[in-house]
Picture (cartoon, rainbow, N blue to C red):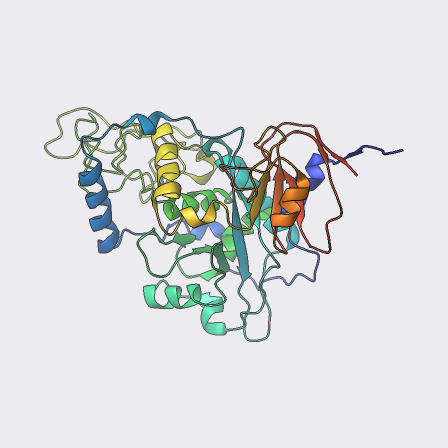
Amino acid sequence: MHTLTTFLLATILALAITPAPQSRKKSPPQEKPEEKMGCGTVIPPEQLKAELARRAESAGKNSAALAAPPPTDAPYYLPMTIHMVCDDFGIGGLSSEQLDAAMRNLNQMWRPVGIQFFIYGEIDYSIHDDDFYVLPNVDAKQDALRQVNAVPNTINVYFTNLQGIAGQARFTVSHAQGVLLDYSVMSGYSSGFFDLEVFAHEMGHYFDLYHTHEDDFGIECPSGNNCSSAGDLLCDTPADPRLFNPIRVDPNCVYDNSAAPPANCGNTPYNPLTNNLMSVARRPCRNQFTPNQISKVLQTLHGSDKRRNLINSRTRYVDRLASASNNYCTYTAPCRTVAKALQAANNGDFILLKWGTYAASSIGGKRVTLGRWGFENGVVIWP
């Protein structure tokens, strides 16, 4: 008699974000996390030009897509390759607990966007180089690291010792791609500091979100009368005077009204979002994206040649209500059965299952990870 095997969903989710067990090496003492407040992501001229061109092209077009709700019930699952940079002697890396905390925090922050991230493959500990282990804030050196062991069709994330900054990402137009994160900042959670939202912030840049205080497109007036052509170009993120250096937000996440309105902007005072993930407010305050930011992320995911390839990379989607004719198990055309997903899968792929009961045949010698597609309970496999 067949028996039902119910997957413990918390365990499945852990499999999707936790690296395989192996020895963990601790980094030597670093600068204190609170000393590395800066985000190292700046808008290069080519990104500025591309953004303005996109805006000119979309001017006058139907903007209904901006109001489309994010797919929070059926999120996209995007693969990450994790690189732990070591010194010449092979010393370096976060502990498995620290990496697990970072991934959980990232996915929690991005859940309202309709995007979740998972670690694809083994953690890369093979970069043994003092020059990369202590990385100056110099574009050429940072982008040289981004070329090392980069896995195509995944988001390459490099953990190392960044000098003077907490993290940095490259926008969609950049030749070198990937995200850099600082060891001392990302290990701060276990040291009593809540710094993990730096990961979510840099991923925002990776999907072409800008700082809420951005002025490369022009200074945004607090009245909002130029919100679509200045600041971060989004009108549901109010004008922001830059909330750090000097610190303008108190420990209760309240703006202190210390910045005067910009010249030629009238007398409307600033009223920035101190909880926005793309601001530089105190880190414990930052935990939200706005609807327009979410819409832009999803537009970037679908519209950029360097991002849309992530949608069906290393993943197979299964929905028991899908068409039986679907064979490739993509996000938009999921397979109906686990058997078809197994047939379509490559070694290392993640198979995401919508809630329901499924019949499963032998995996056939393939190494795959089964996970839940979305957040509803009740995925059952019938052997």
